[in-house]
Length: 489
Image (cartoon, rainbow, N blue to C red):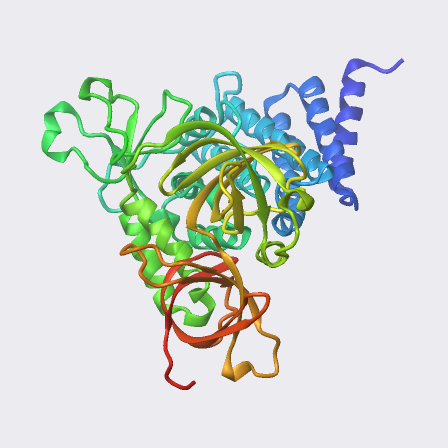
């Protein structure tokens, strides 16, 4: 009969053998194996050194799995298919469980370790937390309950450097991961397209050490009370808050409050982009402008959102919208658009949730048109953020670009052998925008001078002009002002 010690050794050997074996070709199989392995670790391994060793191996393999599935998630539209959703949510839960185990290893239950070992465990835990945040952004999933308490607990376990106004160039890996988490949270990753998110993560991996984190000023340091940047409270399950929108707690309640400044990070990234190939970074310039604004001068709400509760129809994608608007004889009901409930609105846009009908493929930065039941005109909007708790549910925020979009085609002298490009034209809006605006696919306009072809059904209108300043630009769209110009092209 096998002794308990021998049985324990056999289980340990099986776990190590599985971890040393090949990665499963199927992501679902690999994920199931990792979850079962973590379950066995909790059930059979009590010795601290063994627990930490196997936990680290499981974490490393889980991060490798995440790296293999993120490209497919980035290429997919939201909401994710049921298969991808189950895979992403299961992996997110596993990352959270592993991060919790790293937090547990740092607690009194495991008297671990040297400072170097503590730093390594905390760093690995923060790496898992960062991965969970990135996975959520790609999948449209909100952060789970307890995310920020766990992240701050792991960060507090790191060796604390002396307070400094100038960021250190020698921060530990753990501190770098923690600063990446803070920087990513403040730019609202749910508003970034996958390509923008990937680009930002590459920059943060290089320059996150430039984030300055300092103790909040006390009552005796009233002259040092910051009026810019962000603050975070380690006793609360919430991320960084902008001082421009949320004042710091009273001095007597600041024991757990830290002040975060992203100015040096923005300066370093700007310097890095200026040195890089302009063509390589120009596509991300609009996104970086939005990111810098959130780090350095987060906007305050100028106009209140008005709660609402009415339904609207929605179409997504420039080609789909162009085709739908071009079919003048087709009834809108024949198109069977998605039906959405507008929960609040402001002069700048809407927030809505899906009610019925198929959900079209969506990502932040895509074009949609929204039609209110009491109005006959469509409103052209750009998707600013997306959240999805499950494949059947979607919430989105929309920025209104203009009303009554008209399908047009754009032609360029330098591209005479190419079919004219599909686009939408928005009418002028008084003094706010005295010229029409054109919405085209990203980088579809190869010249500032162009011809707009407008099909009125019985006649075709040709309008010659030029592109003026850019209204907005996303990973999917260019929106610019158009000015008629009869000068020959």
